[in-house]
Each structure stands twice: as C-alpha cells, then as structure tokens.
Length: 97
Length: 243
Image: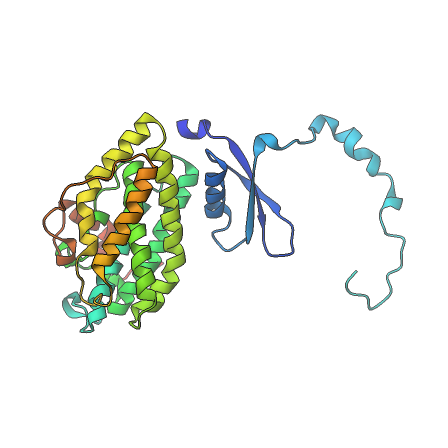
C-alpha cells in the first residue's frame, strides 16, 4: 500500500444493477472523500455497464456482527424448521411464487 | 491500407479526422503510461479508463481516413498532426491532470459543435461527448483538489499550468475540414472555462505567448519520436500481428 493510500479512508461500495433491484455490496476502495469515492467506484465497479446507481459508505460507519457472537446470533435459528415456509403445498401451475 | 503516403483521401473532413484522431491516439498513449505508475490503484484504473475512451475515439476517427493500424503504426513523426500538447511527457500527476483539463475542456466544446454538423465526424463526436464530459469532470475534480490542496500540490499544479500553457494555443489553429467551427469563439469559451477552474483551484491563470510552430503542421518535439519508438515497436517486430 502506498504512502498516499495509507492516509485515505476505506469506503464500501454498493451498486444497484437495474431499476427495481436493491443496491448490492460490490467491494471496497480507498478515496480521500465521498466525491472521489463515487468516481473511483464508477471506474472500478461499473465500467462494464453493471449499474444505474452507486452508494459509497465510509467503512468506519459500518457496524458488523462479530465472529465471536456467531452462536448467540445465528444458531437459535438453525433448529426451528417451522420458520421456513416448507409445509405448504404449491399448487401446480403457479409460477411466480 | 487505402491512403498512399497516409495523405487523407481528398475529402476536407479527412484532414480534420486525422488531426483529431492523432490527438486522441497520442494522448491515450501518454495516459496509458500511468499503468503501473499511478499514485494509487484507484486512480490508475481511472486513468486507464480515460486512455481506453480516447483510444476508441482514435480508432473511429482514423478509420475514416484509412487503415487505422497502418496510420498508427507506420507513420513517422512528421506525418502526425496532433497538437504538441498531447505528446509532452506525462510529467508528474499534476501535469497529467492539468493537461487533461485543457484537452478535455477543448474536446467537449469542439465535439458539441461537430455533433450538430453534417460531416462523417458528427456521429463520432456525438458518441464521444459523454466520455469527454466525464474526462473534464475528472480533471476539474482533481485540479481543484491539487490546486487548493497542500503547499506541495499547489506548487506542482501551478508549475504544470505554466509549463503547459504555451502549448495550448495550437488547439485553436485552423484545420481543413473544421471550417464550420468558429475557432475564435471556441477559444474564448475554452479560456473562460479553464480560467474559472484554475481560479477556483487558487492557481493563477498563466499569461505569456504561445510557442512558435504547430503540431498541426507536422512540427513536433523530440518527445514524439521516443513515444512512437515505443508505441510502434511491436508492429515493427511483428508486422500484422494480432491477438
């Protein structure tokens, strides 16, 4: 990492591929401010026509769940199959369910 | 190859297509030199994108004149008609940014005008306009940050503007096939826009006269021969090589 990059904060980039879809995390990059982060994101993540909208968020502003908390966070959901809608019969011929 | 001696094939707009195509080709090569050398990875990709946009414009313009590969890879320095501004070494990042500001602002104004014309240049200019607008936007963004940044970045930006300014007059030299363009008006609008950006970036607008000579007449700096030496080396070693 260069001297300049070390001084630049990290930004998380979200790209919306088309109208109607949600923004999806595309990756991250370094930039000195939000304006340049948007431009860098345009060049790094949408140069092959991948998107119609970009969000950039300072990586420092993202609160993430910690790997240590994985069990209390996620395990209680694992043994509750009744939370999955798998007990319904899907009538034949229904396509958009 | 359709044009012996690479002379444009008769139509007046062919001279203009060659000149503008050479501008795009040589500037593209200078920008591509940043690959592997840019100050940060993100900017390296941005500069490579600008270079690829310009290469696409060069291909379209040179193809109007003759065989694009023959024109790019077999002409000597004296047969190129780009402005000398684009052949100068890339210098530091401030030099590259200020040159982009000068050229992209000019290209945008010129392409806007050409896009409304009736020559074969019109569809190429229209297609290139959104690219050129982005190139200008990128250059303005960086000029403001560098000029109004640290003492070091300000000094470098100011030095770049003063070094490049004497070459900018060539952008408004008459070119056969651009008769529909009012070059005087173009130059006034260009000066207003570039001066506005430099002033906002706290960089004094350089004065001083243009250098004698013009790249449009095939007069070039020694830097061009070195550039072509590299750009044309693969073609010389492997004529007609393809991917």
